[in-house]
Length: 73
Image 1: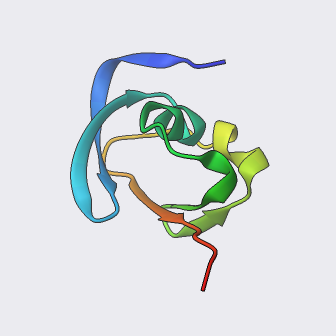
Image 2: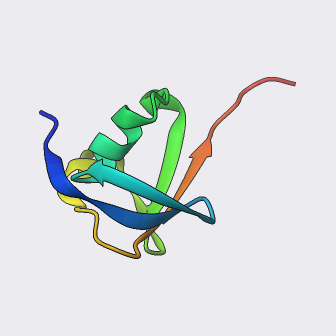
């Protein structure tokens, strides 16, 4: 279930200031259309498991790092 804030917040996404209305990490990832099965996410310095994404709410000034896992040789 996606919940949106009425007012956008400014967060740091991979080192760049970004504005979002996403409510939590999961909503942010959904809004970016990223393949969630291949992602590692860190929220304010804490590495998150996939089952934690929905529990971590976004606030002004939060830092989110997203790394996409790519396999191959």
